[in-house]
Image (tube, rainbow, N blue to C red; front, top):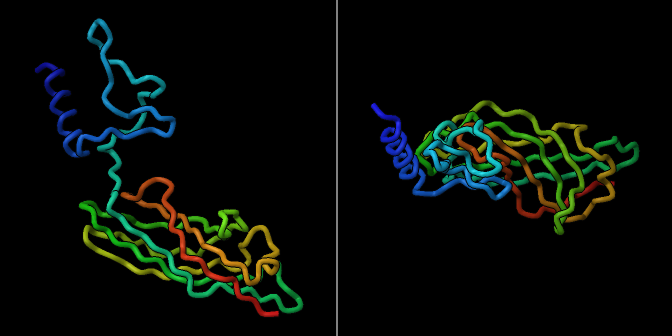
Length: 191
C-alpha cells in the first residue's frame, strides 16, 4: 500500500484531534505538517528539527485548572534570627476538566514575588504523594516550604510587604513550565 494515503489520513486525524490547530514553537515556527520539494519529497519546516516529539506522543490537558492558596507566610525575626526565618504553608487545588488523566503531579521550586513582579527569593517545598487525577476529578493538597531553603536569606527586610507565591508543577498531561500564583499575602513577622 502507498505511504501517501496513509500519511494523509494520519494528518487529517491529527488535525481533527487538535481542532485543526497547529502548535507554535517558542521561536514562532510551526510544528505542523512538512512541505514537499519539487521532486515530491517531504521537507521539514524551516528551522525545525525532525526529532521533535509528535503531539500524539505527549498529550497536554488544556482544561486543567490550578490555584495556590497561602494560609501562613511568617518570619521569626526575633534575636538570634536563623538564616531563613520564613515559614510558609498553604494548599493548592486542581481540577481536571479534560479528557485525559493528569499526573502523577510533582511540585517544583517556589518563588516569592513582589507586587511589581520582582523576585525576592526562591525556596523548596516538601514533596507530595504521587497523585493522578482522572478526567473530571479535583484535588486539594497541602503545601509546606522546606525549612532553611529560602535563597537569598534576609527575609526579615520584607516584613509587612505584600508578596505572591509562585509554585511550579509538572506531570503527564500538564503543560510544560506550568506555575500556580497565589493571591497577594503580607509577610507577617515577630520581632
